[in-house]
Image (cartoon, rainbow, N blue to C red; front, side, top):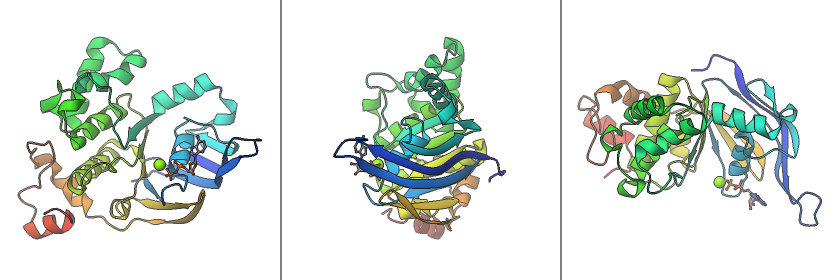
Length: 274
Ligand SMILES: Nc1ncnc2c1ncn2[C@@H]1O[C@H](COP(=O)(O)OP(=O)(O)O)[C@@H](O)[C@H]1O
Ligand SMILES: [Mg+2]
């Protein structure tokens, strides 16, 4: 799944808040991490361990206090804030736990927005937004407002939006954290699809050990340090991906199990589903 090119290289990243003040806090204590193109990596760790802080550094939303960060060949120390915004908009898509859709704005327009900022023409961005909403199985609800969508559907729209400008990297901060396990499962399948079919490099922060187990590599953070790194072992999602072409969309927009998948496998895979 990975062709070996390094897209993210962090070397001894330190992040402090309130630098120089008596209440100075060191939140990241020297993080070194390399992510290859096309990899699907998860970051796990207790609340407060620094996952979001690390994500903000990786996503160029915040600069590290110390350390070297090279993203897609660009050393961020050599880039000014405008260049970083440009890289962020072109190379990175974000997915958040609470979706962050624009209220009172339908799914299509939400997906169009990043393309509008990127200067894509009206016709072109409409066409692409429609295609993206098809990819996430939301073609039936393109005109719906966020408030008319379920959590899982909102997250699908947010995922479509995250890839609007065709970024190489998708960063997702607890994207299933607000969803029930079945809906979270279908959102996870969508990330697998983006990873396998579109070659996106994905970094997923999750509280779910089960979902983390499905990724290529699991990074464990504790108190701002990486304390573990290992391969994920659960490959059952591959089956879902193979059958997703023929799966049906239910009322709620979730991918229902393909009829050819055996009862046993499906109930085993979906775990908590009753
Ligand atoms: N902007 C900030 N200023 C001060 N402290 C912060 C800031 N952002 C995060 N922190 C602190 O950093 C620690 C890690 O937070 P965070 O990265 O959000 O953890 P996680 O996402 O793993 O729950 C927490 O103790 C939090 O209070
Ligand atoms: Mg967090």
